[in-house]
Image (cartoon, one colour):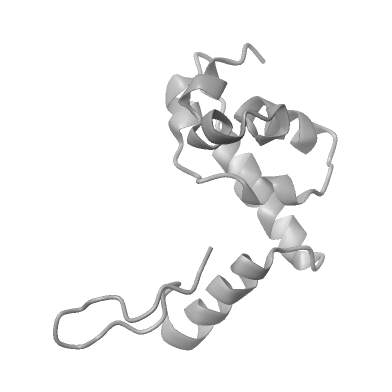
Amino acid sequence: MCGICRTACPVFRVLLSETSSPRGKAVLVKKDVADLVFYRCALCKACTAACPSGVKIYEEVKGMRNKLVESGIETDANRRMMRNVREFGNPLMKLEEKGKKIKELNCC
């Protein structure tokens, strides 16, 4: 709980909110608080790289996201992304055949 992970977290650096920091999410996981704040994580693992204890917060965040989805709590962006994965096999919708350019960005 030293907070070194906060300096590595791109989400915390933008929002400057303790609940958006890896440390804040760790506290919420321990308290089993189901909150949309778990969608404010890029799952980039920068917090783990910076953590002297090697805590893998991203795994806890992924687990909590699964729990939120199972209980019906998710963002509209997550719903769109999952619909695209089910329909097109990827979160970005269909890719054009020739240049493999993204036809439309419809997620997050």
